Structure formats: structure tokens, C-alpha cells
Image 1 (cartoon, helix red, strand yellow):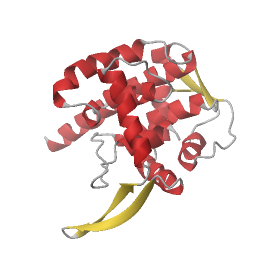
Image 2 (tube, one colour):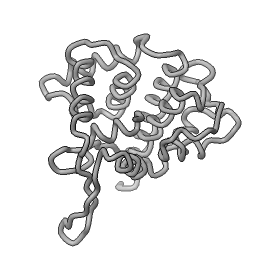
Image 3 (tube, one colour):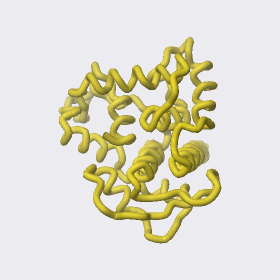
Length: 220
């Protein structure tokens, strides 16, 4: 599995098959997940200070996941800023993540009519993994469990788009938000991964602010 795949599975409602990750810029969220995937797989590296780090392609060997490979193909060979990488890597992120999950028999797509339109839903097939993801991310946020290579990035990405509600109750949200900030600062991954997570958080937040600002300006 990948961070992008786990994020998608976690954000899929097991009862309705709807995608529940509410964000004004979901493309940036998937790009951040792909960046972390590629660093963990050794296909790219992050160089420089965390918030000013650049992304350098190291290896273009296919990873075996079409969505992650597509993200890698959109990166240039020369080093680019994380914000620049984020702006390129999330192309069709949700659609490609669902396609990969369906190939792995973790979800099953279907169409249903909503008013005059047909929409695609994704029923969760691998319910065991989704339950485990929710349990493990909740354990980090609510019970103080140590983050790992899966839960650490998921916590950081969910916090960056203010979507911790997907795994915690409303009464737990304030404490979970504070815990997510601690997770971002903890030493739970390699320096390259920590730079990727920090850069992805900053780039995703900036992209969302930019999208919100543009929408507000267009409405005025």
C-alpha cells in the first residue's frame, strides 16, 4: 500500500462509498501523499532545510503502483522546490488512487444516480485494513501512541487540511489537533521523510489558502 492509497481508503465512507475528505484543493493533498511515498521508496530525495527543501529524482524505476508512478513521471530531473513538485504531482490524484485500490481489490466502484447525474461511488472491500487504519491513527492522536511510517504521514496530511474529524470525535478534536502538531515535530522517520512531510504540509496549506482566496475573489 501507499500513503495515497491509505489516505483514500481511510477517507472513503464504508456505508455509502463516498469520498469524505473535504478540501478546497484535494490535488495538493494527493501530491503531498505521493511525495512522501516516493521518498520512502527511494525514488526521490529531499535536500536542504525542511521548509526550503528541494525535491531531487534519484531513480525512475517503476514502483508497482500506477498512481505513484504517474506522480513520479511528472517530476523533472533537476531539483525543484517542494511547492513546485506539489503543483505537478497531484494530477488526477483521487481518480488514480481509487483505480489502484480497485486493482488491489480493496474497493469496488459503482455508479448511482443523484438527481439528474450519475456519480461514482467506491464500496470498501478491504474493510479490515480500513478499520486498522482508523484505529492506528486514532491511537496516535487520542491515546498518544508512537507514529510510524504509515500513521505519521496520515496524521500530518489530515491535520494540514483540517480533516482530523475523519478519525476523531468532535469532543476529541482540540486535543487531537494539538497532538498532530507534536507528531509533526517528533523523530519518527528519516530526515528525508521528515523534510518531505514538513514541505508537503506547508505546500498543501499554501495551496488551500491560495484556492480559497481565489474563490473568494471570484465571488466578490
